[in-house]
Picture 1 (tube, one colour):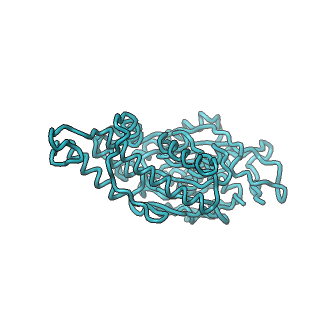
Picture 2 (cartoon, one colour):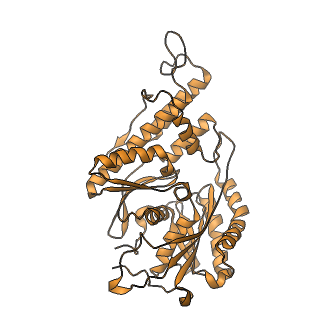
Picture 3 (cartoon, helix red, strand yellow):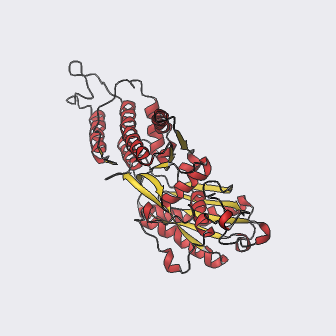
Amino acid sequence: MVDLNTVSPKDPAKRYYLALGLEGSANKLGVGIIKHPFLPETGAAAKDNSHDCHVEILANIRDTYVTPPGEGFLPRDTARHHRNWCVRLIKRALLEAGVRDACAELDVICFTRGPGMGAPLHSVALVARTCSLMWQVPLVGVNHCVGHIEMGREITKAKNPVVLYVSGGNTQVIAYSDHRYRIFGETLDVAVGNCLDRFARTLKIPNAPSPGYNIEQLASQCKNKETLVELPYTVKGMDLSMSGILAYIDSLAKDLFRGNKANKVLFDKKTGNTKVTVEDLCYSLQENLFAMLVEITERAMAHVNADQVLIVGGVGSNARLQEMMALMCHDRARGRVHATDERFCIDNGVMIAQAGLLQYRMGNYVKDLSETVVTQKFRTDEVYVSWRN
């Protein structure tokens, strides 16, 4: 069995662990502080409580680097944003959590080691190292993907689900086995969130609060949901490809804006009237992408004989994706979908604190600063998950 009390709290009299989490792998800078109670059971009597740590979220603060409509975010500019805001957000989080003496009260500082954009990762890791040296608090480098999974499991109490991880940088179907989160299928090119974001740039819709959310709102306004715009559907075994879909729908949107009446998909051949709106394109894109995700997730469920799905990552907060996944799970022996809202689906500091604190409690923390070097490529299945049976 797993003993989550391998490392004792800094102050045994308080009977709890306190962790600071720092997330900055993309354009969202998150700082979170959580508390884990000390578990009375240890050794052979201990249960696997990694999905139910009775976590108390003391602070969950986030600031997003937002670019003008039609533009993406560059690593250099994003890193500058993180450097400007990181210390301020940490101060706010400590104040909100009621932490007066970080040196005496914090058990561990957790930061995103990867995957992600290089320059933003470096900026946040530098702050984490500085705080660790200044406060004499241990460090834990966290895999971003594992952070999403562990936060989702804790919030939903899903013990051993198939995980669909969908975000701007990653699209993976994952199941746990033998101390690893095994990747059953993934994108062969662009991630689903990146596909939606890039289409939003083509449409020149606002990037606040997020491009994917704004596409979801446009899709919900579609008045012709019975007739989808036909798009490529590319599933290859357990993997999927979205670059062709993006290229095709981008060309449709550009023809629509130019009024290219030679395009018979968009304009009536006889009258020249518009047959397809921007809302129709957004709805069709969502339906097409999400159907592909549901298909490969169902295959993974069949393979491991699971009846639960946990959706994590920024795109996981999309209500239509949750609805489509729920329909599939209901048809499969009345299974269940677990998902969280935007507080925990979108990149945040508490998810890094959660995964990092689980690692720390198993005695897995940084022994030398050379172990804190960030990496843009850090696959989910590279992490040894010591805190699960």
